[in-house]
Length: 218
Image (cartoon, rainbow, N blue to C red; front, side, top):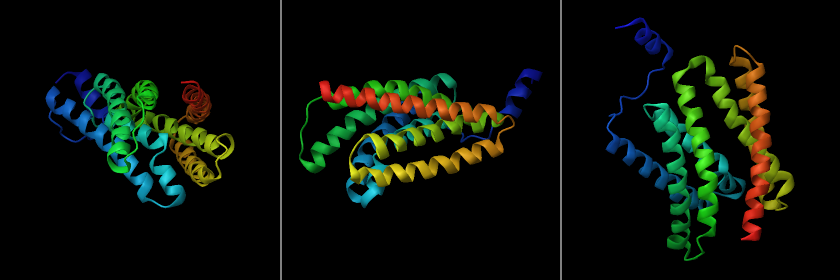
């Protein structure tokens, strides 16, 4: 074993010994995407109050791509797999709405969320892989989720204008604060987690406005 190989082993965390064949990886991406889309739709109606909002929040989908990226064997698979997973989640979510609630809608919702999912799935798949492959970068990767929680929490609390969603927004802000503290405490350099958290929060706020506008103008 070369010195480079030894270094790579030491930098990597223990991961599940998934088969590396592409059919298994492709199946994992498809299954997790379908579970994410259908599961969030079901939980949205099954859980009470603000918990239903959290179950169907963008953060849950971001975490799904993050978790998948952590499990996949390479960075390339994590980025591509995260994007595909959220596209599948977008379409299966609206299929679940039709199956379970009998509400049929046009393709615009799935198309808009698929476009957002390509970007978000790639980013969070990358972050998930980074969190698993490099221990010293783990707080930076998790700070991306903290910023996403903060941005969506602010969006739900102050910009949506729906009182029923504010409880979920407040819960997300509390979770964002707790996760941000953990990232800052465990980071070897505390500047980067703070920068990533703020940048992610602002990006989510901007994306929320763009997505709301896309639904309003379609």
